[in-house]
Image (cartoon, rainbow, N blue to C red; front, side, top):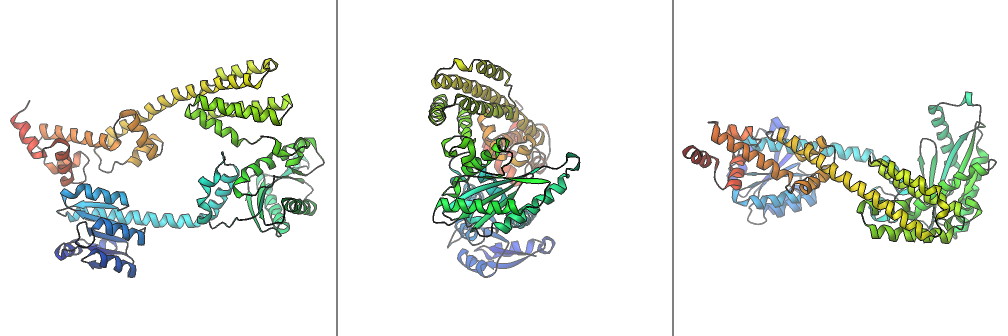
Length: 535
């Protein structure tokens, strides 16, 4: 049973709410009645409540200030404020603070009952979601590390750092590395285990890893469909000592593994001194594993195996390519040219093999095309241009020539994107407007419903709609409802209550207030005026 507190300095008003609401039918009870805000705040500390119904104008502490403090005591409490009509803007401020809803005087107890039901429904959903969040914490931790390893930028800490405390992750160590283990089937193809049996074998391997990695301060494991990733944090006197300890543990795993149908291939990423540098370690471990092709009798690879050199000399990280994609989205030609100039300078300083440069450039171009594919854009002309250029690769004598060419390619890409996005924005706008016109007469119409119909997020729809039309969604709905009401008032003899229902208003009082604010005249006066003057 939910507990309710009523706060009003007018005892008769408080008693009216208590006596005129059928609390037992709502599975609720009025636990507290207070006649000033400060007493109410002290009372809710002693007796937790689920809902507060309070007048806004209070002598000691107004309802908005009280609501702010009440939400700091219990962020889940629902608050319904009662306000006079001339305090309408005052009440809207409360909604922005997190108050659930407000109603205007004089009170319509039936309307208030509906608001209370809505508040309880929202409270039940919130509690259910809190339980789901708590239950999903292990999955959220897994998602955190998965996102971290593949973070497409340089400043992962600013986007993911706040999650460490929330997920209760203690990762403060001197050194870190990422280990990737990929089992490779070596038995007879006709005897190859099915997916379920392979997953079982992965779990057996994971148990073996946990057994031999107990010496490290902290290890977090990510089990994927075809691999196991270990994120290792350690306090050590030197990175060299830590690196050797990782190699020893990995060797113990490979030597202790007894299933002869599989060989265990392990890639060890470079050592980092920060948790937020793990994307680089993961990228280097992935890259090191690619060298299995050249060393069929070897199982353990680290970053130094890449071409027999220190991996840190190379810029194989795909994360840097995401920076270029962001610049294409921003349509910043100068920044694109600057980025490419820096990219090629760095590339030519670190790699003196033209074939390797060819491969790196090809990877970069592939990422640009992949981005355009994901945006459902026609790339056939760009693909043809790339093919023609690569037929004449040797004709490029300096990297500046490549910078100029790829810059022009990127300009073509964002021009395609710009044209596509403009068309997409108008398409979404028309979908939203059509849905609003079909449903504005329903009082339940809300931004979430419209966004769901347009298949985008509410926040994005709100911004996009205003950008295309110059008008907010709420203003559009309000205009349609007022226009519809005007037609009913001029052409029918329906009562104001019937008109308010037909035009999507929750009640007659809100309809009358909205109509007068919009047109400067009450509905009744408007009807009388147009009856006298049909023109």
